[in-house]
Structure formats: C-alpha cells, structure tokens
Amino acid sequence: SMTNGVLHSQYHLKSRTERIYTRNYNIQGLPKVFHGVILPDPGNRFIYFDIVANDLTMLFNMIGDQQGLKMLKASKDPYHEIATEAFGDGSQRERVKAFVSPYLYGAANKTIITNSRDKLVEQDIILLKTAMTSLFPESSDWLSRIKSSAEAGLIPRKFNPIDSIDIPIPKAIGTTVGPAMIIQRYGARLFRAIICALSRIGYDPKVFVHDSLLIQVPES
Image (tube, rainbow, N blue to C red; front, side, top):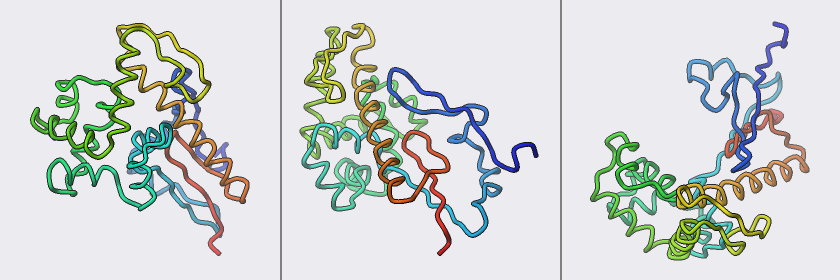
C-alpha cells in the first residue's frame, strides 16, 4: 500500500481535559477483528501498558491519597478492593468499573444505573459510595469539596495542582465537568511524563491513546 503497511491515525487533543483521542482510524476503538493483523517489525515484539483503574490512580497521585497510594504500591487493584468492601466479592470488578468514573465526575445515581447496562441497581450505588468513603476518605473528601466549590461557579487554585490558578466554571456543569477537567488534565500530563521517561531509556511508543501505550521492543 502507499503507507507500506503502516496504519496511520489522526490524533486530536481535547482542550478542556488535554486527553488524546484518535479518528480515521479510531485506534482505541479498533474492532477486535483487526487486532491480529497489527504486527511488530521483524525481530521485535509488542508490550502493552495500561494504567489500572486509571481515574482513581490519577486522583490518588494528584491529591496524595495515602490509602490509595499504599494500595497501588502493594500492587492491589482498587476496583477489586472496592468490590470486596461493597459486595464481599472481589470478582465483581466490572460492576465497580461501571460505577467509579461516572461517580467521580458527578453523574446522578439514575444516570450511573442506566449507563451500567443492568450491572447496577440503586442499592449497589449506596454500597459503592459507602465503600469509597471507607477505603479512600481523602479522595472522597476532595471530591465533595471540589464539587461544592464548582457548583458555586469556581474551581479554587487549591484544587488545581496543575497550574495553580482559579478557574471560573458555569454553575450548571460545575459538579460534573469540574472534577473531570482537573483529574483528566493531571492524568494526561502524568501519562506524557511516563512516555518521556520510557523514551529516555530507549523505549519509544508506537501507539498511545490517553492511558494506553503500545511499545515495540527487540525480541532479545
């Protein structure tokens, strides 16, 4: 082909959150039927890197949540731990996953339940919120305070460790867009730092989209 067998995509940057996404082709959403034809160069292999419980991981690092960081340093999966706390069953990870990001970003209970596609009911939301508060009191307190401030039309600089400025925000979207903007901007910058650190030791990414990275390394 004119591209010598290399799949190219258009990368776009969301100005509000600094997240990267792709179009033409959507690499992150590439149908599984095509996965088998994506091959490394001869003599190399791919290593896939992804951040576990991405939104929570970003939040823990950003605010210095000691319980969350302790969990990550012990190689524990926060979703598994929340499932164990809420349901007494760590295998219910997918139900936790359906809850966490919408909850962090201020979605109403009804919205979380609808978007979970029958994974969650009202009682589950109560149990999951209680589990979050019990396991991660620092993160829960930060979320409560930033949502309260954003609802009044301002994200104070104390909630913005990225550039330490006050951010005016429309009251109508403060409780949802406010936390999302701060957490995702921090996450995007942290992930770029990870890419740069890998590059300095000789590992260059072939593909990256927000919190996912495909690295090509020699077979040896």
